[in-house]
Length: 92
Image (tube, rainbow, N blue to C red):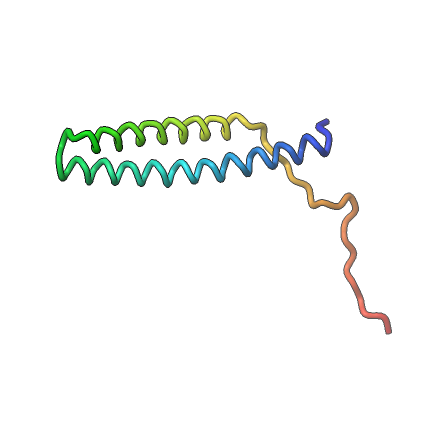
């Protein structure tokens, strides 16, 4: 059975990978739009090829982060307490 420390570390890793994945998604969308715009204005220009290069880099990073998230072991969260909570009643 995994220790509590390993459990918390795996939660942090999963959370960080999801944040990074959303950042890479936004970057890929931005560079795709920039490449399309630069290609529309002047197809084959240096600016278009730089945008395509950055789009390729962000797509590769996004793919890598997505693969790593899939390879993480499933995380079973517990309620945080070992014993169930009791309902609070007003004293009369």
